[in-house]
Image (cartoon, rainbow, N blue to C red; front, side, top):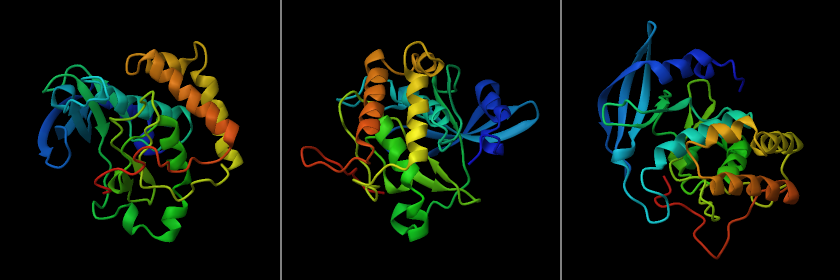
Length: 245
């Protein structure tokens, strides 16, 4: 996927950041309040997913009202790492139900998910598995990988990522123990450079993650570069999300 894709065009991000948006309906699945919204900006009309912080169900292991910021952080890391798999996502302070994340809605078949992907589709999930290891995704369900009209993968629901403790829970263990391809190693190296010191990505993440969480992300990248292999599921904690879809 290329960054000049229409979905990833800078005008799309600008529309999400500044456009007027109105709620059209609520998604009834999931633990937190999630709404479908219409966004209007400079003659453009977009559909987006709005997740207000006030609608977040408190969790014992994540700070209160921090999930929307983590959605934005996942987008920033996906872009900085060159994966371009998370739909454009911004943080809006002026939403109808208060501040929260606003993410471009991607048209997809809701009945198509990891558990009915073809072998060819599963073989293309290696970058997804690596991205999840970097952001410490605690909830990669099968339905959180969308297939767009052009067969590209889009990743959603990253509200419980970036914990400082190892919490990787995913259904995508297809590549466990396998060597990380060299092109993905280069992505990790470039991403590390953007996170180290006073680099731009680190500054962009500051409003959404704690200093310790950014540091833990850097440490996970270092561990992946040292091992040069995909992580394996572990027996000392849950490695699979529930429900799986």
